[in-house]
Length: 150
Image (tube, rainbow, N blue to C red; front, side, top):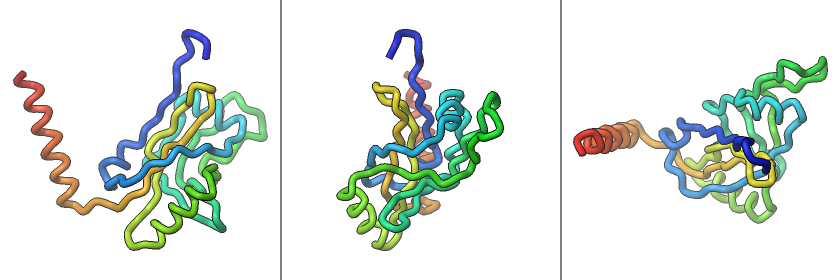
């Protein structure tokens, strides 16, 4: 990419807080032109996003990509389902894990690779219990206190 152009990286902070991440995958996304422009403007909300396996394909749901303000009348729908592009082997592996109890697939971050293509990092894992979340917050507070007193 040319100098002066910043890379886009949008992360889902709730994913690391709410889930134990066991595996991560890099997936492409089927996007419309106005969605790409909105992503470049950082107009994305991934907080409640999740992935669903339908007919052997993985779809991203509940990701809000705002409409591009300078688009014409044929802009995209902000909450539409977006298809994730993965290998068949990866899809089968994910399907086997999802069928076992308690596993889910969720978006971790949306970023632009070195070729300027948007990729979604998705995680496969189980949800944390309330006491796990409290332990994480406690460890975070302790680490912050240690940094403060150094």
